[in-house]
Image 1: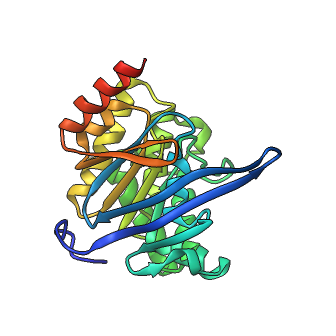
Image 2: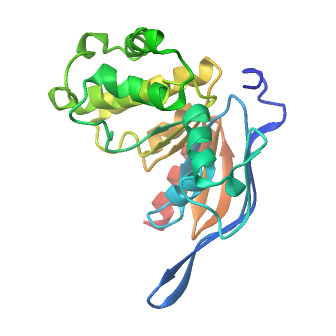
Length: 251
């Protein structure tokens, strides 16, 4: 992991000329168009845009969940787009924590066991330390009292906190999230976003795809996508004002 304070240093994430096409009954559909993007270690970046603009596909390029049709994806100098499937899965488990909109906690495992699962897969922590670390992470996100419960007994906000703890299991330098507040009420969503902001303060890099304009108030930078291309990049509080005004004008 690079220096947590190195926001002005070399990028943690680089996308170079990334294009993504899908085949449809009507022919090829271009979802991403010549994306060039750099994200530094320790940045909090949000990706916004209308449905179908390519936000989730862009996140899939960064995580290696999907591959570009052309172009290059580098994360911490690893050429993600060139890794074979087995090494790619192992690399992802150690280097990227992924948080989903619908939590995706395994229903038959306790909350603590869900968090231990990535540790079992990656082997970063020895077996005798894994439960201890899971409990520490649950304490960090504020739900340690639910460690031995099944996910179904938790509220949506509590499940998302557990999902964030699971994403941190192997202490990855990068945490990405796809619409992590989409199923939460306003108050709970604000608490979850503060958790992400705290991760950035501790040195993590956080990239969030979102429809929620309030999320951008915490971001160092907001990437606006339109029709698969980067329309603009906005920094700081100005991002919320400019994006909100633009969306209002289009409505």
